[in-house]
Length: 197
Image (tube, rainbow, N blue to C red; front, side, top):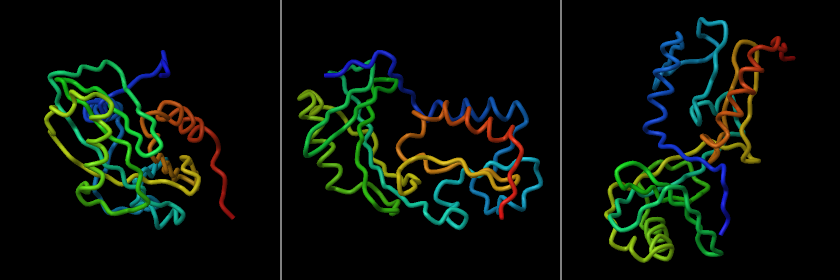
């Protein structure tokens, strides 16, 4: 096993509302689910972080499907993420509040956003049981799937085009790279805009 002393984790369902409230208190406006063209917004700076909805501006953006399960176990308590690396299947288990464990690791080259598949559920559950036999008695609280935006190299990008800065392609690295990329975004916004040819 590997011990990563500085590793951290968070629950996005708790973190995002807190971050949004903090930004809103500073005058940041959000437009969720709005059909907008960033170039038409009346603002000094527009940060386009629409994910896959920005494909018309970022044509090499693709979708990578991820599936996850949320389990509740009375027998297994974790205080930090655990990863199982195996030639056939790899999983990660991340502790959440109230005895919940988030189980995931699927990466499918697909932009289909439908429910989790039987194959993925079976692989995740089998891997969880291999990680700790007591997880066979855990309750399945939720099964979900989502599509992550990714560029061909799977690395995020900041692309500034006049007043619009495209911040996209975080793939699986969203919260892991967010602090570093926020610093990069601030530096990008502080720099003079380059004019596109």
